[in-house]
Amino acid sequence: MHAVSLSTSHPHSSPAIARSNHFGLYSITPSNKPLNLPFCGLRSEAQGIFQLKRSETHRAIVSSRRRAKKLSASLSNNGSAPTSFDYDLVIIGAGVGGHGAALHAVEKGLKTAIIEGDVIGGTCVNRGCVPSKALLAVSGRMRELQNDHHLKALGLQVSAAGYDRQGVADHANNLASKIRNNLTNSLKALGVDILTGVGTILGPQKVKYGQVGFSDNVVTAKDIIIATGSVPFVPKGIEVDGKTVITSDHALKLEFVPEWIAIVGSGYIGLEFSDVYTALGSEVTFIEALDQLMPGFDPEIGKLAQRVLIHPRKIDFHTGVFASKITPAKDGKPVTIEMIDAKTKEPKDTLEVDAALIATGRAPFTKGLGLENINVVTQRGFVPVDERMQVIDADGKMVPHLYCIGDANGKMMLAHAASAQGISVVEQVSGKDHVLNHLSIPAACFTHPEISMVGLTEPQARDKAEKEGFEISIAKASFKANTKALAENEGEGLAKLIYRPDNGEILGVHIFGLHAADLIHEASNAIALGTRIQDIKFAVHAHPTLSEILDELFKSAQVNDRVFSSTNEPVAV
Image 1 (tube, one colour):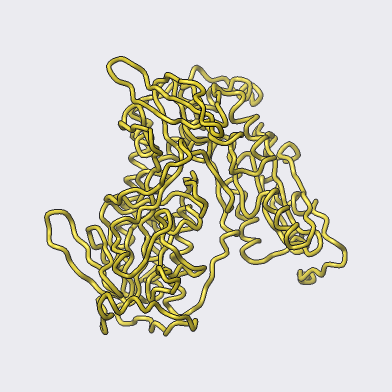
Image 2: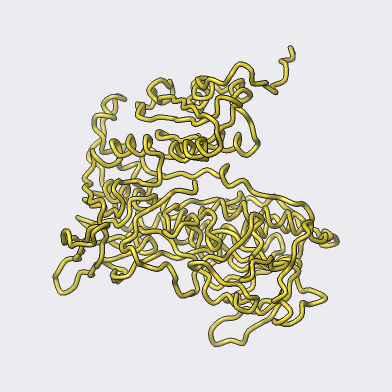
């Protein structure tokens, strides 16, 4: 997962962005290029299902720190820490990461507050994963209705399909509104205090929050979590007007469907929007800085996906180029895109299109947090943290009682990763040490068909094997051999397993095909639990289901006979 990369429009662009009142949850890795991973990790409470009940009479006793680490001496210069606290935990940012941490904190008996200066749900719910999936649901239906060959194979006859643009936009907006309200209600129902305003750290265990035109409030907390997310990254030279030159924030409103739209960046965000726009009738041109499209995916899966998702559709592309300047449409003139060679920086071509979508990734949303008050210096905007999400100051020391999760730390910019990190932090402040295995966190691209992955790509696995001195093997399973996929007339797809034949360790799984985003979790859970192939291959899958693709995948792997299996002997019942 770490090597996922996307194009940016200019090689010297900086992702540093002034902090405003937007808290987001998208995607990135700790490289110097923002990435597109628009994924979501909502708890069941987002669907209006409240399962926890807050105790009014009991608070968990927060233990002392588990690890003997030196704490930052710089804290003494920023005021002394409080001796009593308003809250056990204060979370700055109420996106998916902050929400997940808050719910787990309540479950642990912690008195919790969450500070939000925009709206509950952050980018994921309001400007990201949730509304984008509503648009992709529409594009999926449109593709089914427009595919005469597919329908005839099923014996169906359907008249010409059409859509109402405003109706589609309303569907996305209504879904976001529903999930946002459910998240807000879940926090209130569980007794989490929602503090409205922009949060700023004043010093050790002390935060102020407030809104423009109102006086600030100060609260203290035994522990603080930063969960402020990210915003769209717009490289230099690109003028965004929100109408004809747009980011994903604007595109999700679907205010118009252009005849021809250029998408800068062919990562997850770009691919998903190409799926939406082409299904609704647009022509798409990708502009990618690297030499190939879909650079962050496993190469074999990416090659297959291009053959299905790009080549048959009204999509062309320019690779190895930067969009050095983009000018919005004005006075009857189209959007103008000037491209230069990514290596030589020589001028290449100029495009004139109806609209341009900037899908060059996300930038951390951390400026204005008051980090200077605790001697913390960001790295390209990211808050430095250790493997337990504890913030590291400018001297390389742990800042006591301060954590950072999600997009703001840059470890893995996925909404569900932010939530998992938040839960991990709550475990720690509740007295139980916990380290999250980021290689077990799955990711998905919700195109039609879908793409999903967990762990290492084949090139990453081969590099690791060479450095550590072991061999890897590859197993594959085709959707064409799956009964359920054939019944759906959706046999285009592949599942790929990367593993160690000497001990059965699963290094990575990549899937392209029908419901790939749902199928990946058997593999991600196996990695998270340390389950080896010699054990999981004995698992039973219902027939006929798509899950049998994973069953065949694991059964086809060849693990050395000498490797011991921990599977229990069967018991007759």
